[in-house]
Length: 122
Image (cartoon, rainbow, N blue to C red; front, side, top):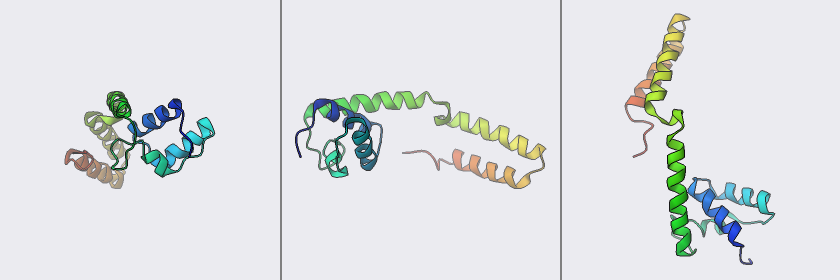
């Protein structure tokens, strides 16, 4: 395979930093740049992979983009546990008012899982 231009390398690293799967990145690069890559080629630019073969500058760029992505994701309301619990509380109240005890029970179970840390990445 020929050497990739810097713009394509940069875009691959950006997608990797945003947790995109290798196959998806291959498809996106083909759409954006009309360059066909295999998931294995993409993996070569993933600093978290043992097969990483890129330059040190891509490791730093990956870290920068991933930090920015995490900050932006943290600003989305649904990523906050308090927001999810508040929304579940409103839905439970509505289900009870409508007499839908099955839905209310499911929502309460969902809230218990939320509080119990089922959906927390450690």
